Length: 270
Image (tube, rainbow, N blue to C red):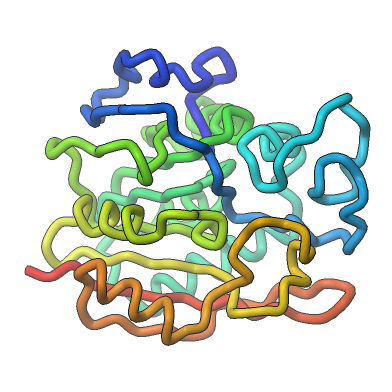
């Protein structure tokens, strides 16, 4: 959940614009409490180290980072794009294209975009791309992809929709968020923000964990343990979306079993 470069990290905390013309207001002091497209648990269940994330990163920095915090994702950003995540992003993009009739002109906003894997997988199916993430490390990798042409013309923002407001000058046709909402505390505000960003007839696509027993992240990690499909449908409907439907998206295979992912799609009225 990320910014354009490491040097640009959280520059909107100081009340000035990002310089990319998205024109939203930032009122801060908020708690960056959510993560993104995460394989927090992909390498097993040993959560005994200081960081609580993948234990291949169990090195001691002398301080603990909250699991799923922007700082914990910063540390993993440079090596984030592995084969499993790239394959999952491709599946996610395919499933979105199967559920939403894309024309190739859609203005895409991906929330919790991380390094931009899903945006990369969708780039040939949509129009202009905007990504947002709270992790400076993730934003830096995404920005590098913009700079080297893999995501040419895209934008990357540092924005928390639980507290920040996207200005009226910005409008999108497709909002995508993958493996993010189980980290978000204020779902009502965030989903309402998605609805407010979409043009009439635009679509939101939520990819996340089916309800599980807490094993995915570990019982000691303060995140939502997935979603019941009827629950996510109700949340989207309460945010104003219509024609909501939820279907299978993918399966994440871990040592202790498989975890289902759903794709929930809603339409902005109008």
